[in-house]
Image (cartoon, rainbow, N blue to C red; front, side):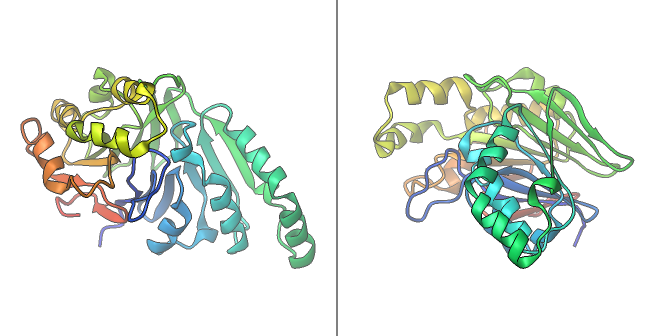
Length: 290
């Protein structure tokens, strides 16, 4: 198997889970054996383990924005990796304010962390973690990998980012949470894989009823801050990407709507390889098969 792939660990848009639900957003990118976690929604830790990742090898994490379905399990992931043998630095890139979440997590777990350092001889957890604030432009560049970001349209948040991961042989772009934006077409130009958030327009009224405690403001948020599946297809076509994967699905857990509905939603706008995300799907780069 290729050393380059993306595993969609959690493919549900929004933080709620229900019986038989998929899990909120998290992903694993692997480039030539180097593992990068993108977003840490609920379930990320188990999702990584299910992919065969040794959590003690955790080293690089990106958080696209500060909505709970993208970073709720960041602290528990790092802590669990620590209990699994982590002793090397973990670098976390994310919006301004993410470090405050981490400090709050450390405070909430202080008794446990202190006991494990004293009683079990663990290294100081806080000293292992480094935070860097994302801004638009090149975020990280090495000889083998260039990671860049653009701001997306996801009001009311401003610091919400699409992310590009480019090596000599692979180019993967995550749309992040966003309404359709022209800038994403240029940002994803020619990518091997575009992972784009998607809403199924016909399913939104039923989802509103199931949510139960949202007002018309929730529907207004969806419409101004997210992308319909057909518009994701347009973006992929205009960007000339090689493969489109739909994730952060809204909804992902309504049995009334299935894979055929998602395929039909993009059919008039995208005719290339298409993956409809489900938890655990692995998309091999350089192949039309997933």
